Amino acid sequence: MARVISVTNQKGGVGKTTTSLALATGLMRKGFKALAVDMDPQANLSFGLGGDTEDGPTVYDLLKGDVHPRFSVQRTSCVDLISSNILLSGVDLEFTRSGREYLLRTGLESLRDKYDYIVIDTPPALNILTVNAFAASDYVVIPMLADIFSLQGIAQLSDTILRLRQACNPDLVIGGILLSKYDGRTVLGKRIRETAEMVAEQVGTRLYKTTIRNSISIPESQTNQVSMFEYAPRNPAVRDYATFIQELLAEGV
Ligand SMILES: Nc1ncnc2c1ncn2[C@@H]1O[C@H](COP(=O)(O)OP(=O)(O)O)[C@@H](O)[C@H]1O
Ligand SMILES: [Mg+2]
Image (tube, rainbow, N blue to C red; front, top):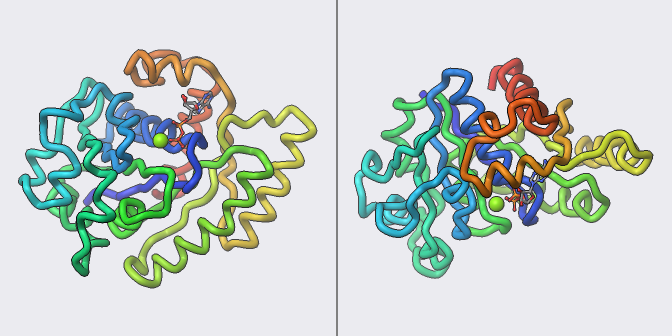
């Protein structure tokens, strides 16, 4: 049975898609079977994996129940993908029936025994798409930028996750906060990290030991639609992601 991991933060540009890509391709590289699911209408994850967001069935069709889950999966050069589609942006208005929180969970049910890990990328919002991701997941990773404005958003996010846990998924585990594009050498960086540790504790979670450094190789690999582990395996930020995966595996995730 696959473990389902959501990568989430209501802010944009914090490294959600990058972390989703790293988890899916990095776990695959370790010999696990991984499926990446793109719940963001902007389809950055689908692009990064070279997926088709126009012609083939997408996660939108899966949510609608218009396609057999098996046929919503595309094979890309590194991992299996259920791609996004721009129509996802209308889901909030389009699906109004009760139980609409569980559409993704239901859609993924028959796929769970085919994979070791399912990684879900989420949009920069706390909307029905994010709620569907939470309801379908076992575990949540929260990437965050190491700056003071980002810290301020964490209380709201954690509040939402806790309410959702009560309402639709009592088993959901909030794994922790992953500092991304982080420079631990500066005084400011160290201060932010300490503050982040405090904030995390206050909202009932923690910082992961691993932090992710800043590197141009990350956007480069995405522009080239190549896994970062192939593109620049020795790059510090890529090695950080490999360490992060080790940290998760060591904890039994
Ligand atoms: N560790 C990193 N170093 C350098 N650039 C990064 C890093 N992580 C992400 N980026 C870049 O920052 C931008 C936002 O990251 P992304 O993963 O798309 O965030 P989100 O999905 O939260 O909006 C992208 O252009 C991405 O390539
Ligand atoms: Mg994104």
